[in-house]
Length: 443
Ligand SMILES: [Zn+2]
Image 1 (cartoon, rainbow, N blue to C red):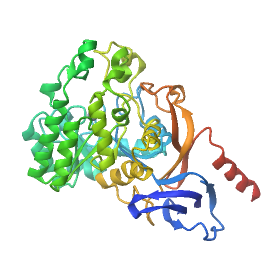
Image 2 (cartoon, helix red, strand yellow):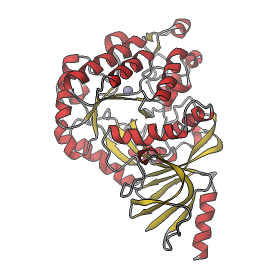
Image 3 (tube, protein in one colour):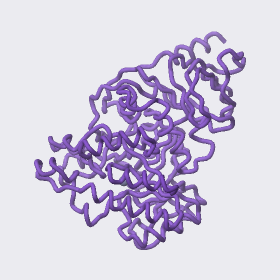
Image 4 (cartoon, helix red, strand yellow):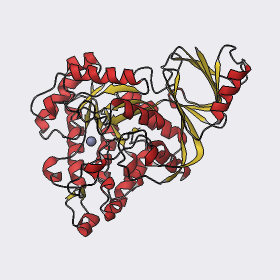
């Protein structure tokens, strides 16, 4: 089975390609990029990408899929469906399921469910400590053999620096990246939003930016001490970004990701007590948002990750203090990234770098995040100009907790290819369809 993605504009930072090219795929792998003047291989099926961007498949380092244990919020299959609808060809699943992914049986279960769904590639992240309780190290070696791609106690940050040091040393032995949700619990305990002017006005308990900054600085110091590969999840503060910038300047193996809501919204969004503005880390004040935009521009921020965190409507209907943290994000991330491109803040190449090239490198996902010969044929096809309104009623996720319902966006993923198979086509999008039908009827 050969597939030619024809007439598109290929952006692949891994091979410094930024040009009109045809992409040839066979048996789930990339054959190569062809010049548009090259003859079209006769037996190839054609996907017309005229006017579209053809990028390596997007890799999301941070999703919560809720299976096993909370399938009423999301299953691996529904999460994977939301992923490909948002242009994500690979998603990395955090271990805070029920039971927690701290052993190879759970790891294998997640991988099997992902394969059965046949949509996005699903890569499990293993727990750092048993039951993510921060007391005893998890069996990282056994989980790595079963297929985990990183380790983390995301959502339950390791409180003890001594335990984090041992976890980093242990993870280093297995060549696993340690992902940390930076939040010093004794500073953030009881907080439901960013500590600042708005928490004061709204009478809600705040989480100070310093809670994130303290742990980010700690993790950078421990990366230096242990030589481990350390990745800071959903960085939301100026102080944490400064810590990452310094760590990189001194050659440490430290990387970080940012979630779209943290560059799109400020803590003022919580003014209506809408629980869809409650997440952890919380929405921050404008100065922190500005720091994130600077970090995206200057390369301090390596990756865009969604922190997709589905919750049932009944849970989010609770009062702000009681509602769970988190929002869905797989289907809105690309549109929100395009907002930055259209505002002239970053280029499209940088978006591809943060959504595909860098994430694949950070978790050592070999032969992904690029369109080099023999790479997995995971492809995200983008239309930078398509105007659309995000309607949560049409979301592929089981959950509806998003602050972006009704937002008009320009730019979206319109077709998603995983392992050489077209697994998603934008519903309003007919051009690719028509071409395919045209070709089929001509045969
Ligand atoms: Zn987290």
